[in-house]
Image (tube, rainbow, N blue to C red; front, top):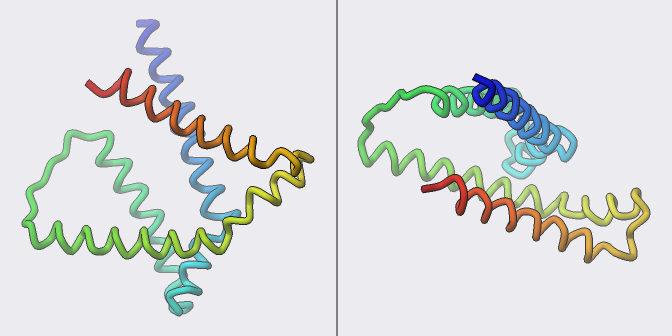
Length: 138
């Protein structure tokens, strides 16, 4: 019983942290408005925002339910094409805002050690990924 309670608390806490990070990433960096600006589709800004919210909600639903559906290879190909376009636009938008790390380093007064800040982020991502794949994926 106590193990399930711990799992629930850790899962909820982790979900809140990841969700908060995602929202902060999208809003603070202005990813959606920048995507709209790059694609020259300002009149569809609200549709972009709603699509992100609906996509997150649908992805969360699919993650927590045993729901399966069969779809054709053509639909999967079109779905993959949309994913590729989104990732490409996201990468283009991120190149515009990549100067976040130098600004952060100056604000927290470690601008002389920015290489260590970047190295810590990279090693943390590698360590976390290795831990997940080696411990949790069987």
